[in-house]
Amino acid sequence: MRGADLIQSFAPGASPEGEAVDARPLEGYRRLARVAAIQVLYQSAMTNAPIVQVAKQFEQHRLGEEIDGLLLNVDRGFFRRLTKGIAADAQALTLLVQEGLDRRQVGRLEYVLQAILIAGAYELQAMRDVPARSTIDEYTEIAAAFFDKGERSLVNAVLDRLAREMRPDDFAIA
Image (cartoon, rainbow, N blue to C red):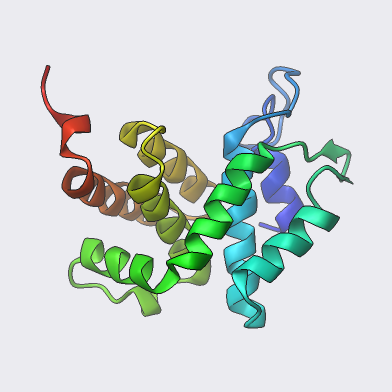
């Protein structure tokens, strides 16, 4: 899936197949900010450019612009929190994801899958204002746009495992 196609598929009002189901505005949507952050991580990995540099370029040239008829008004504050936080702690987040993977090696995963897991791990670790179950659901849905059921299940399992370790109170029975 191309970058613009991916963004288009996550626009509020679009079904996963890209068919409009509701014409809600894009302003403030966090899912689109998450997708943009994942694209930044992917581009950083592909170009060997620092995450902060790629995020800055992405924000200047892509966010707020119209691409394929879609205005990319995302939650910029959320996008910045994600990209700056991940950039500051990328190695530790990679190790955290590795722990969640159990026997698989994070370096053997596709870059997009790595980016999804790292972004999800950061959000679980640092963004306590977002419920853990919401974070898991969001990144699982994003994974579904890129991959088959196996990878989607992997994202769900890894993030669930990490969330239960990092935020056990979010899973306590009331």
